[in-house]
Length: 276
Image 1 (cartoon, rainbow, N blue to C red):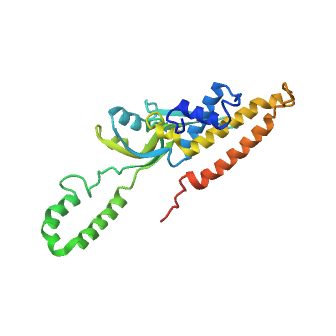
Image 2 (cartoon, rainbow, N blue to C red):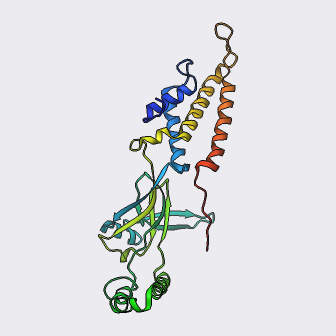
Image 3 (cartoon, helix red, strand yellow):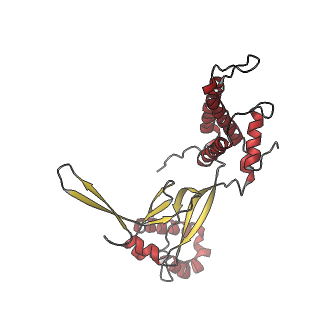
């Protein structure tokens, strides 16, 4: 199939690019499966089409609060002891203030701001009173400029009094650490993640037809093929044919190097500059 739409059809496509069925590709099925997994991992972690921006919500539970605010010796505390060369030991405690994140989430941009400040919370908030007493009567006279300037001023106050929460996330842990006051968290409230989730090829079969993935997987299988044949270097086949696994391996290495260079300039999302 010219347009792969499954794992096996992608494998068949790559083998045909290497010469099958005219040539016998001396690579085991297990080795091909490993190459597919490696190619998909790079595709998901580096390719701009390998992930999709997603908004996920999570409801805070009482277990989250207890784990986040537990003191030394509590269920939400882990400890580690460090011993100095002089003899005394030191025990460090870490609060298990994390929420387990699905394995498909590969990066987190932010958690939307908790709307719990005096500026915007409840009927006695500044925002509510502004709309109740001023906007309804004065908007037609003062115009939108006054309203926009007032809102900007309130946002500045809100930023100073209730700053954004500090987050820590590592893909290899699949844990979202939120450095917040868990005692003030409300059970039943939702947090919303602005995150990136991998494109599961089983759900979105067009992933298998990605031009980068096809090139990269073909080169990986070719390298494995050459590596398998290296041990037969110098062996003569009937008719005087000599296997040259080293040349196949070196060609594949060059192709992989070129593909990775193209990844930086064509397929990868460039890093954003920090402004301000």
